[in-house]
Image (cartoon, rainbow, N blue to C red):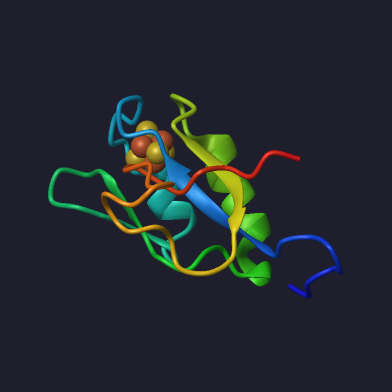
Length: 98
Ligand code: SF4
């Protein structure tokens, strides 16, 4: 993604609401390139964002989640804030407001 003058560069991330997720695992079946399941069936999302060529698959995975626990978010490009540092939100990267 190219930066536009005056705008921060963003990337698209899959974010799981771990409270809402019931661990059905449908997202991992649709998007095994980016989502694997832990021993209890809960999703582990690969770091680094969603590549452009997998965006349609990611959108499909979001749509099939039966409890709306999966979403796509635009986050600032670059490494995520580390635990304990301002901007760290624990479960996933903060969404960029537009
Ligand atoms: S489809 Fe939704 S409920 Fe099922 S594992 Fe994925 S995020 Fe969780």
